[in-house]
Length: 295
Image (cartoon, rainbow, N blue to C red):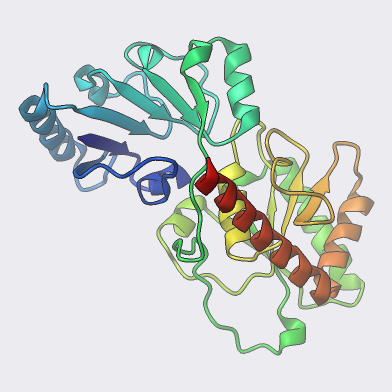
């Protein structure tokens, strides 16, 4: 039996139980959410009662999201313990350091963890979720009354951008507006709003950046599955799926504000290019799905 311990949808990894690939789903799964506003103690108590009842019956625990070395949950975690992480932890203590397997969504993060020595190399594994046209959309976009030529919005997730990147983007957006696209807007929202399915205005592209220690591989693949072009920085695993000039734009470390404005302007004014990026993203997802099915 597989027990999932999830971070209440504060991470894209919360969707892993419905997108996991490469193995048959067990006949029975149970999910417990930590850090829930309505009471973590109740969820923890139910978890403890469940694992006590099921000990010795093929039980495996699957911890999803950031490691919390001070969490009250850690005192009740049993072997085998499998971790699903999308960021590089700074400190790892037992029982997390003794996990049977540590699953990450990108090659880059796997290599960083190998170099960091936080986990034995043989426990590290890269797992790619199985995405399909039926995979639930992460962006719930509302309707707009503006004319098509005015619908130009860039989505930015607060947690996936640094302060420096946000400030540069704001200046670049003003530059694009002055170049003949006065209705171009940047929409900034926190990640939790996205994961809660709150509707947002229609967007035509997404910018990502942020710290290299956080993987955006899964987020980028989900966006491509929805046909949304991506502009991202050349940090961490950003370039694993965002192919420059094919599925989006990849901004190098030496690119200037002028370069950023150029790429933004190109994306805004060229609807054919945005369509091609979207189609290429769908083709990439289809190829990955085909490779996974053959594995």
